[in-house]
Length: 193
Image (cartoon, rainbow, N blue to C red; front, side, top):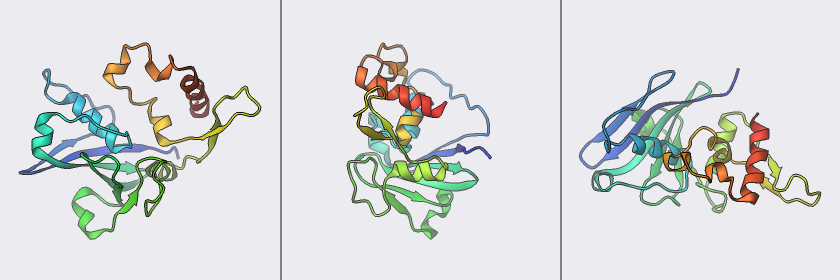
């Protein structure tokens, strides 16, 4: 069986009410008029899958407390909960749908590799393990014998599935203008394909 991650729902837990976006199996098209939150939905998903930060619109700041993403990873339900105002805080993961999380104890993960004091490790490692992806290191400079190795993270892989609309038309797509970053990006691409 191939590994998969399917997004079920994005939940913005609000001051007065929750804002819920449901996703169906297969391709989902997010559409609407200009400035109605289409990009924000994608940004929240990206953030809840480990992006280092999120830009928040005034409407979000005034009405949302935190965000949650309900996903299915290889037939197991998880709810990922993250503080939208303090991105360095631990990411909480419940192995259940959103409404049942009060009956479960969350696991707490560090959002990046620079914070190694999270009770349950790194969020990237959780996603890699749940998806049955090996945790490995790739050469930073593959043609150099003495090259350092860099840990492969979930964020290295997801960049091939999610491209920010502002980056789409730029010359720096996937770090192509930064030779060091581009070299490593090519190694990640080789690993994936």
